[in-house]
Each structure stands twice: as structure tokens, then as C-alpha cells.
Amino acid sequence: MATIARSVRKELSNLIPSQEGPQNTLSEAMRYSSIEGGKRLRPFLLVKSANLFNVPFQQSIRVAAAVELIHCYSLVHDDLPAMDDDDLRRGKPTNHKVFGEATAILAGNALLTLAFESLNKPDRGIEAGIRCQLSQKLAEAAGMKGLVGGQILDIGSENHILNESEISQLQQLKTGALFRFSAEAGVLLGSGEAEDLRALSNYADALGMAFQITDDLLDVEGQQEKTGKRTRKDGVAGKATFVSLLGVESARTKAQDLIETSVRCLNRFDDRAEDLRKLSDFILTRTH
Amino acid sequence: MATIARSVRKELSNLIPSQEGPQNTLSEAMRYSSIEGGKRLRPFLLVKSANLFNVPFQQSIRVAAAVELIHCYSLVHDDLPAMDDDDLRRGKPTNHKVFGEATAILAGNALLTLAFESLNKPDRGIEAGIRCQLSQKLAEAAGMKGLVGGQILDIGSENHILNESEISQLQQLKTGALFRFSAEAGVLLGSGEAEDLRALSNYADALGMAFQITDDLLDVEGQQEKTGKRTRKDGVAGKATFVSLLGVESARTKAQDLIETSVRCLNRFDDRAEDLRKLSDFILTRTH
Image 1 (cartoon, rainbow over the protein chains, first blue to last red):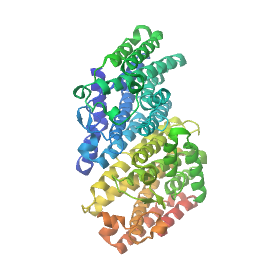
Image 2 (image 1 turned 135 degrees about the vertical axis):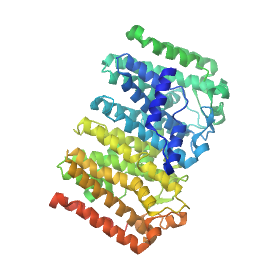
Image 3 (image 1 turned 30 degrees about the vertical axis):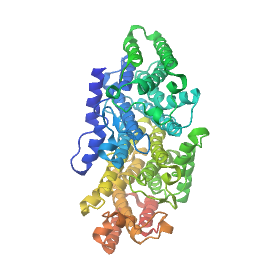
Image 4 (image 1 turned 120 degrees about the horizontal axis):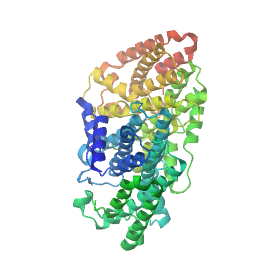
């Protein structure tokens, strides 16, 4: 995991060079919220899925960096005063606290745009048809049918109690879409079969849902020092989560069930999927 | 121009269907700032450039709609309270005035993302290699080396007097990049020659600069009823423009010179470029 995180860091640092002059603020704001930090779960998932199909690392890491750009942009915008109004992210002041609201909005926009710029570039030997497919699918996962659609539900959910199926839908859009894209991208890059795609999609769906539940559990039980972000904020904002709806114990059981489901989806890949099984374990037992 | 505007409207309306349920707010906010209105100058420029190379209309209009999505997103975000804080756009209340700040940010993000989703789709018979090139170039024009980069200069320019070369740079990024992309996209779609690309790039650069100057002139001299947006706002914000720097008369002369330059760039296309010549005339004489 640390190796892939280092490679993502290097990719992102190359994609966002520090600029001289008046553009410096923009590049620094973009770097501030992308180069350091984060567990880089989506890149790990993507690279390890691609490894099942012997995809060259320089190709999978390119796509992994694009996914991480989208993830980082979404965090910058989610933290904005008009959204969740958060002060702390990855143990540091949020982007807008450091650079101001206007620059934070623009830095997010530039990170989002850069994902598609880099994904469409020809220099890693990924076939043009596959680059187009990946870009289209990443845009779907990021846009109104994915991340943005989930965020709209999320801001509408404060002080309005969602039921379990609504929370499921919110989570599918807000977290699930990028997890699923990451797993599917490996199959696309490696020209896997339809059965591989189905298995890894199901794996990612279960994993993403489990991730969201453990995230909610950490929000209730975690320590701010370890999670690096403000905890207990969902309760304060009156947001319904799996935990507020099911209670801590049932939520934990649900997460365990989902992790078991995710591991079962990997059966067809035998020993080659060992790192993805470890990822499932990590999601369940993480403390940050 | 009206014909192309109608086709853009139809494309955008198909790309952004009204959603039922909680997603309705997002789709309505996206539609509010994209389906109606605007002169659709960039789509016109793109389609007419593509016509020089006999590109099928269903292909050029697809790319034109993507450019317009980027343009519309940038207007929604430029108008935000954290940016220019504008109340009026295209004769209507701005997006955040109607839908709130959070939804306006998200609608902008979704419009931006949708541009890349649609541009990478295979259904119009545009070769995958060309779709990738177009997406990469559009992302460059929209991102830190284009629109977003220009907006960072713009928000830094309030109450700081830019010189003519700085204003030129700002304009190249903020307006020029999308104009240039629109003209170049026609050449890419139609597999034009390097000389064609150079001619149309130069055309678009001169046209874009003239457009910005006439925009500044309208801000000083125009009537709010015709322009559909708040006028005299640059002066109030202390923003340097070509007009504040050169004065009205010299700015008008500069715009005329640029329009003459733009028309000269079209010589190699003979009569086929008549509509682009009319576009140049329109830019110079427009009252809105």
C-alpha cells in the first residue's frame, strides 16, 4: 500500500508542477490537497485489480492518479463553507481555510479537469479506445450519476431522516461509484472477460459499502487525532447514516457481512487476489 | 446562428434530462444555466470551422455542446458569491440566487464533468484517437492552463492594476483558450493540414481578444437590458480591463484591428469561410 501511495504521489507531483508568478497560488492549492496524504485506497484497488490481468504498472498508475484527482477534488469541494463547512482534513486545515474560498473552488475545478486531461493522453501506450471508455466511465462515476449526484442527496439529507434504502443509494453514488470504477478500470485495461468484470464490480460494491459504514463508525467512535478530520460531525449536522439508523452493533455486523461478501467475489482469481483480500481486511479493521 | 443555437439546445437538453425525486434539484440547476440563452458563439465557431473540412454536423455539434457545457459551468462558478458575486446573468437571476450556493457549485461541477462524458462517447462515429485528442485539448483549455488559470488571475486582479501584457495573458486564458479550442476542433475532426490549424488558431486568437474588448466596452457602455447582465461591474470591482487601460476610443480601434486581422487569417479558405467572416463582423458590432 505504501509503495502504491508513493507512486501516486510522484504521478500527481509530475501532473501539478509548482508554477511561478500569479499562477503559483493555484498550483500550490492544487498540490496542498492532492500530493500528500490519504490512504490512496482507490489507487490501490485499481492497481491490484489491473494486476490480475497483467496490466503494466505505468498504465494502471496513470488511471489510478486520475481517480485520486477526482477524489481529492471532491474532498476540497465537500469541505467548502457552502457544503459541509469543515476546518480539518487529513490532519491539516482544509483547502479554503488556507487559500480562501475562491481559490479552493478553482483548485477543485482544476483537479477535476486535470483527471480527464491526463487520462486522455497517449503517452502510456493505452489504446485510444480504452482511454475513451475509461474517461467516459470516470466521468459517469464523478458526475450527476455518481459523486455529484450523491453530494446533492447528502446536502439535502441534513435534518431529514433517510431510510436505509435512501442511505444505500446515497452511498452508492458518493463512495460506491469511484470504488466500482477503480475495480472495473483494471478489467478494461487488461481486456478481462465479462465474468471478471461482474466479479470485480460486485467486489467493489460490497467493499465500498463496508468502507462507508466503517467511515460512519469512525465518525462516531474514532479519535480526531487518528482520522485527521473532525469526528462526530454527522450527528451534529443531523445526518442520517447507517450507524444512526441501525445502531453501532448492527452497523458493525453489516460491515462484517459485506466484507465477507466482497472476499467471496474474489474466488475466481485464486491466489492472485491475495492483496485485494488484504484490502478487505484493512477496510474492516482500520482505525483511520 | 439561430439554427446552430437550436441544435445546441437540443443536444444539451438530451444530455441533461429532468430527473425525478431528490436528484431533480441538480438536473434543474444544470438545465437552468445551460439549456436556454447565450449567443452560442463557441459552438458557432466550432461548427463553422468543421464545415470547412466537411465534418458531419452530428459530429461537430457533439463537440460544440461539450464546449458550451464548459462555458456554462464557468459562468455558474464565476458568478458565485466567493467569486464575482453576481446576481444577474443572461437576463435571469444567477444560478446560486435561484438554487443556493451549494447546488450551484455542484451543478457547475456536473456540467464540467458531463462535457468529458459526452465527448468520449463512441456513438457519433468520431474515431477514438480523435475523441481522446479533443478531450485532452478541451481539458487543457478548461483547466489550470486555460479557463481556471485565467480566473485565478482575474480574482487576483481586483484592486491591483494589471498592465496591457498581463491583461492580454488573462484574456488568452479566460476567453482565448475556448475560442482557440473551438476553431482547432474543426481541423481535428476534419483531419485538416497543419497550415489550416495555424490559420484557424490565429483567427480564433484575434477573434477571442476582440470579443473580450467588445465585452469590456459593453460593460462600460452597454445597457443592462440588452446585455442581460449587470453592467459597469468591472469599474466597481476595480478591475483593470483593456478599456480602463487604453480608454474607450483606443480600445475600440484595437478591436477593429483585431477583427481585420482575424478576417485576413481566413484567406486560404476563400468563399467557404464566409460565415466565419460574418462572425467576425458580429463580434465587432454586437450590442449584447
